[in-house]
Length: 443
Image (cartoon, rainbow, N blue to C red):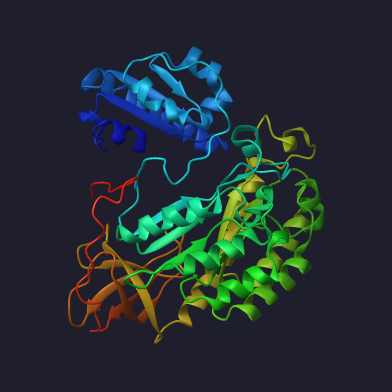
């Protein structure tokens, strides 16, 4: 989008208005592939009913199924792989791009960019690719080996984002905790987080990182998060399972007791920290006993946030060739049982919040009703965690992108409800003019 906008093309979220349609795809698991295919076919209809003259498919699905897309989806006019993003302008304008295979792609601070999120939060990718051998994962096959962005490149981009009015930055990568290792930087992520926290901003800022690998969490990283107020007290650490035998087959190693001790150390170092993880149920060889070990772990861990995924048997993953596959019905019931268990834990933890006052970032009016405003605590990551809903306020009305004090009055399974006090941040600062290459998306 940044390359196209820089070239002068006008972006639209309405497919019926577009002359060129671009579908950015995922092929990580079967549901993602199906969603990608459904979207491609849906967009293809606009070549018949709208003004669209060209349909382009981009992203991971191109890397994995390039030939099949060409053969089975004649509606598609061009393909752009994950390492070919700089070719998007030529493809959209009808030119034949250089056929030479591109170097592994990784954007930087001079790469033009359009914010696809709301203006008050943004993502920064600090690394691409992964070197871990997890047997269920196909990402390294399409994203390549792990590679970090330059330290100052991340700082420059973050500084521009904050200057443009962004209040919250979320650092992402397939393995953020390995940041800097390939560049010879020791304690890369903790040093980066500390430097980001020192960026001067007119208003309070939030900085978090996502997707940390459990055996890469150092004491220095935890101490850094605890030390700086701008660093969100939030750890997103996909554990995938708690049974040592399942983790061994996943080629991740470790076991539930180690994870419990790690959680204890995290909570001791960072008071008030919220911990999120994800688990896979139905991995080949997962027995009823393994699943019970997982359930016992979730009960003991009392995690703030938990996502549960059904195992997806991808034909290019190492786990595809494992024996003792779990049938779909068992996977379905295990997922439901684990989520029901976590729902009770989440609701109990949320109930302890009633009566407390917390800072929340105002997201805007609720998408469900005009009677509520939507907000998030710093311990609720955008787009994956629950919300705080504002049903009343004192003083000035809420404003999108403002951080206000909220008193929690109700607790639900994953969401909280409360009222804002009268304290307001006052007039919001005017964002820096034309903070190129960060181009403000229309909102």
